[in-house]
Amino acid sequence: MTILVIGATGRVGRHVVDQLVQRDAAVRVLTRDPAKVAFPESVEVATGDLLDIDAVRVAFKGVRTLFLLNAVTGDEFTQAIVTLNLAREAGVERVVYLSVFDADRAVNVPHFAVKHGAERMLEAMGFGATILRPTYFIDNEVMVKDVILNHGVYPMPIGGKGVAMVDARDIAEVAAIELIRRDTADAVLPIETINVVGPEALTGEAVAAIWSDVLGRPVAYGGDDPSGFEANMATVMPRWTAYEMRLMAERYVSDGMIPQPGDVERLTAMLGRPLHGYRETAATLARA
Image 1: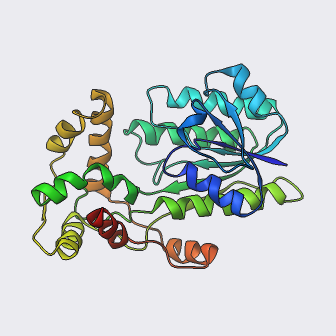
Image 2: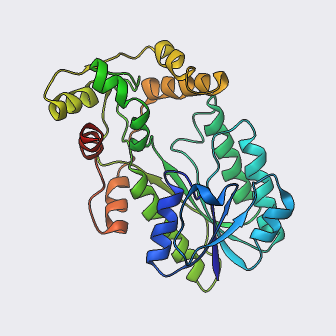
Image 3: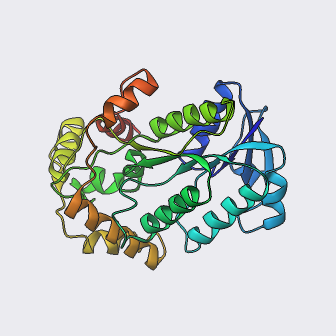
């Protein structure tokens, strides 16, 4: 049966599609702009967005398993709940949902609270689902690389507790493994939650030290105050989004994103290889 991938053009979704194609899965994607990404020839493309009810209904035809990744938007919760209702209507009970680490605890951060709401719907309405809870994406560092490279400052206020940043490729491969497992199962499998983390919990000072080593010159940590970070983000994204990023950063400082015992070992066993680490991304960005 077909696996529908929603959120297929982003940093995680495009890797999910590639991983599924490598595993010879029948894949369909739903995207607003089919020209945005060159999908492999075997991938079926449906056009539409998550609030286009008719388009989503068409996309679900012949689908058994859903990968759902909602972008952080002002109507993210509506998109998630409408999509899951339409999945249920179409008889799709097998889901891999991309949530976020500590979704049930960081209730003041809008996109964390939204994802916890979707998790609750999956549980309450009887879906068989894998809920993936990734930490902060290492790949997001592309947004701050210019500050690091040009000004010698690591500006993300991630604090001193530790954040186990995760590579999008690791998230995607875990997602593909779970999608195939659920899609090929003889019956709908029970809900399972997986923390998707990086191999080490890094503080702001530790990240700055990695950059110093990679670049061969000093890089300082910009500190835990998120006000400057919010102001910088507001120059490249909507004001409300920048404020939400500030709230997220405040959670990094107060709580960190620290793996539970066994998280790293579980992921390593699933993937059959070590997790990608922060230094690898820093070196790649420095070369670019």
